[in-house]
Length: 265
Image (cartoon, rainbow, N blue to C red; front, side, top):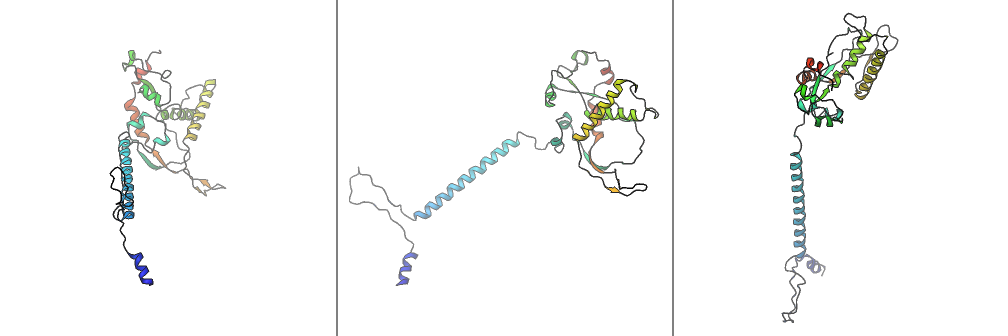
């Protein structure tokens, strides 16, 4: 008895359409209550195809978006590692600046050297002036009547070589070693502008150090005649290739003699 009841549940039932036979009037609409075949299985299969179609359309949309976006940006941007920590500069778009690892020379009492004192001026456009977040109306331009460069040539200098870095360091060096051979201060120490210039340069160098604060650490060691551990200033650093920047500067600089003869507008 129990087995016969279980057989009822194990059968594969198929449902047939119910059609009313008593109504022959064609104006009376009839509706099929059940379709032929296994309704549940067909419904599940239809849903699966719908989900698969939606997924394929989504993948197609993502692929098209990626292709479109890749065509509107460079595949390989030079100086990609420097751009997030640098303000825009034409150099970043012009040349790849190599980086290298070195150990700074932390030797005490090193003799001063006379290097990189020249200040060179370069040419950029109005669009590039705007990229620097500067006002083209106040930025100095090269007079076309004198330079024959057109009306879209603006004057710029590399920051590292001028007021905020090399120039100011050179000024402080001359002030500190004024009695050293060939070191002659540019101004008389009794001149008020001399001290204003020194104070300005010291402040600019401090701001640059703070802006480019590095994360390297110094080890300490016990040394003779010291009651406390002494820092080892020969620290390992990752640096930009300075000579690459100097080479770019010389290639793009204007004639210095002509620059000195340039009339004031």
